[in-house]
Length: 256
Image 1: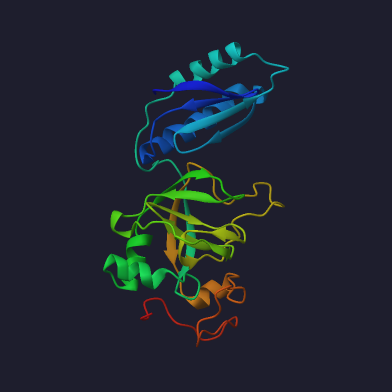
Image 2 (image 1 turned 180 degrees about the vertical axis):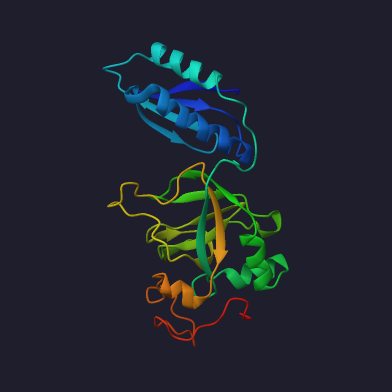
C-alpha cells in the first residue's frame, strides 16, 4: 500500500493514498481506518476517511508523533493492496427510494437530458452498487459513487434554499442522500423513508465511509408505509398526488 503523510494540525496528521477521486481507493482507506483503530486503540482519538485521505487525531499530551507514525507505518505495511471497485466482504446496505417527480423535481429533466425515459433512468441509477466515499457537508451526508457516465450531470447553477431530509440527488459523477433538511445544489431524483441521521442512536449516521449501498426503487404506497413524507415538500405537492397513508397510489413502473 502506497501512502505518505503530512502534519495537518497540532494534533492531527493526514495520510494520503492518492491524488484524485478513485473508487479503487475506497476499500484500502476503509480497511486502513479499521486496522489503525484496532491496533492503536486509545492512542488514536479519531480516524476520518475521505476520498483520498485518512485523517488521524491523537493526544499530543500523551503521545509523540514519531512513535505514533512508527506504529502507523507498521500497521499499514501489513495490509494487503486490496483494490477493487466494491469490497466483496462489505455488507450491502439496501436503501429504498421512491423515485418520482413529486419528491425528485429534477427527475424528468435529467431523464430527458440523458435521452432516456424516466423508467430507464431509474433503472440505470438503481442497478449498480455504490460505495460511500466520504461523510461531510452535513451530519450523515454521504457522498457515493459513481453514477453511470450517461447519468452524470453538473450541480444546479442556483442551489435550492431547502431540501427535505431523505432526498436523493446527483451532482457530477456522484449521488447522495440529504440526511437532514438543508440547502442543496444537487439535482433531486427521489427520496427514501429511512432516517439517515439520528443523534439519539448509538451510531447516529446510517451510512459510513467504505460501506456499499444499493438503491431499491419502491412505489408510493410502500414509501408511505415505511414512514415517508409528502407533506413537507417546499416545491409543493404534484397535482393529483395522494399523500394519505395507505391511500391508492401510483405503482412502480407506472408511466410518470
